[in-house]
Image (cartoon, rainbow, N blue to C red):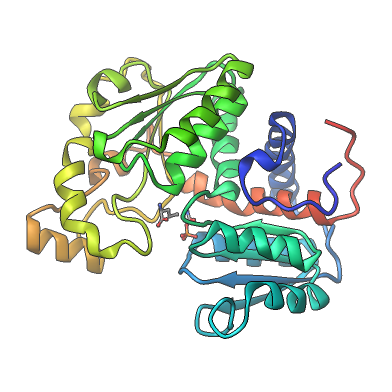
Length: 335
Ligand code: CP
Ligand code: NVA
């Protein structure tokens, strides 16, 4: 049963339930493309709390709410007291008394867990420092659309191995039978507790978990090549150190030429630093002579392989599926 549940981290759901959400997302995408109404949350009020900024997650929740017949209310960092002048517990009780569901994007995983505990309504984690679970449904949906399956594929994530994306990818992949390799410098290897977690699931799903600093060997048998920013939100003072550490982990043509599967795909949760068309991108080019960071513009624009914008669109369909399954009165057979 999905009704009334929160999605705070991937392991809140079983592998079969995650795969159900992926398939339901694909179904809702089809309904949307065919203009078939699907107002499963008609009349609901949904609270969108953002302590950190967002383009995709905010847009996805807003449009998904509208398509589902719900009313979204956005509250940014400067608008609410959460944890500053009012405890998370007290804020949660207030939100829960007025809203039917809450999205939270912020720093602390404890805060999103507390919101769920004290609000009494479903809470969806739109990214914390630890996990990015709604992103996972979109990512593995994009992979399933491309390959028609998940089990047996290999995903190689290159870059900051200890951020929210690396954590979520290695755990979700191992739950769904996708082998995941994290290729990063030793200084940025994932925490052992995350790897232990992933290995437990990998054993059950028949996949593997690998952590290595040898990026060239790692990518050879990749089906999916994944990267994320070198500096996550809240770490903006770390550009210099990360550029030094992560330059050898850039996804560029020299690296993609090593991939044996000519039908591999490139994914990126976005936003990406692939040129100097951003304030930070231009500043880093000026200060360190680095015009492209985690991915080169050439790879980013390689239409044969790059799927990051399909992935971005899928954020909306998958967030819609998550909200509808957990807060709509849908009949979902036990999965
Ligand atoms: N991928 C992602 O979460 O994008 P936003 O930060 O724009 O929401
Ligand atoms: N690791 C990135 C992901 C952005 C979607 C961050 O936390 O900023």
